Image 1 (cartoon, rainbow, N blue to C red):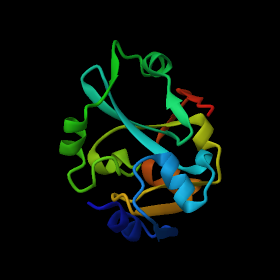
Image 2 (image 1 turned 45 degrees about the vertical axis):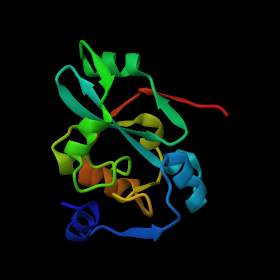
Image 3 (image 1 turned 90 degrees about the vertical axis):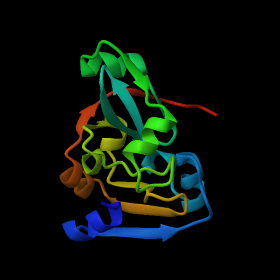
Image 4 (image 1 turned 180 degrees about the horizontal axis):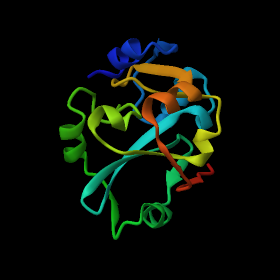
Length: 154
């Protein structure tokens, strides 16, 4: 199910915008004139044998060691591009929305992003962005809140 169809059916308020193609969360932040701390970057990892969607701010990186510890996993590694293509067949590669529940993936969100009042993310393509309240996002996804990222300084 496409994320926009899902949002429409759930009745939450959201704003859909179009922009020049953006291939990273930081590029989306720039294109949308949105601080990177509000732009969600979904990253899929393989924790032991299970895929997990991790959602963090654009200007942060995953601390795999912290994530492994908090998930109680023996091993955690980034999912490969080929695997992502199979999981997210309805999305442009690299434009996955942070809704693991639409793809039968448990979703964890970093505490730094969870504290914000709104969230922005790619809508399945490199040209669409969706902005919605964090309260609505939490209601629709029910992500587990963990601390697994660190800020990237430029």
